[in-house]
Length: 87
Image (cartoon, rainbow, N blue to C red; front, side, top):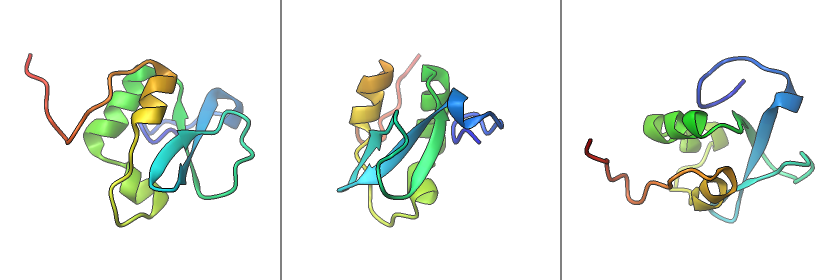
């Protein structure tokens, strides 16, 4: 299930993400050890996940996680400090 849009899809259609050393990192091969979460490789799903703040829940982490690496991988605009864009 995609943590962004919450729709079910085959694992081959989703990008696996792993929390490692306080950061969320992409795991396209699906082999990095650790708890994983799945996301469509679509900036809209990424933005939805960021807006809903799913990372602590998805990775069962109490602290904040740096998601800039995944944003760069997807070509999405990273959100810094929870700031909202006007528009």
